[in-house]
View 1 (cartoon, rainbow, N blue to C red):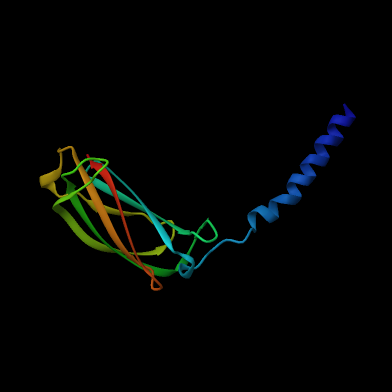
View 2 (tube, rainbow, N blue to C red):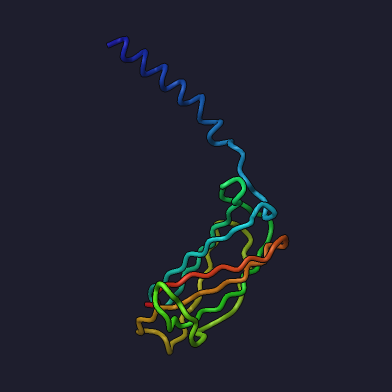
Length: 143
């Protein structure tokens, strides 16, 4: 029993010694590191939730920025194509949002005329980081 406890103690000590290097691993934290953005959107109860993920392709890492500001000009269109071949139809809503941290989502109210309809839609965003302007889009179902 003492051997198992000693082995457990040695393994636990090694794991604890690795934690600081895992936690303090170099993280990208500046908007100047961003060269790709992924847009995720979904709707529920008349509200569209938009989440942006910021990435650096060269280092294949997410960028966890804060203390800076981005602007996102967005437009949402009815998808008159298919899921595989989306095609922009009528504009449903457009606007812009300013975000001040990597983990902020933003919310868009669905116009009343579109509530209760089950439409495939396309969202497009032009994101200005202050260093680069990126264009992203995605499709989702309005609910």
